[in-house]
Image (spheres, rainbow, N blue to C red):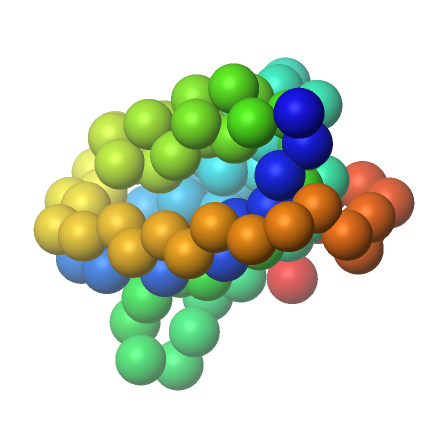
Length: 90
């Protein structure tokens, strides 16, 4: 079943390759959406795909790349809406 989520990742998540890490996993899992840095130091992810793949991506976001310290991942689930064509770094 396809789903959607919007997440904010807090901690030491900028300047450590977090966006590329999220991009790599999203592409590997067949997920569409985007990842971007926010001015307040968090990283934002919007993603759509199969529910199990999205859950796996969230696990990866909770781990983060080497050098990141993920303190918190806030996830809001929603209905699939075919919002994205591919996954991109913004």
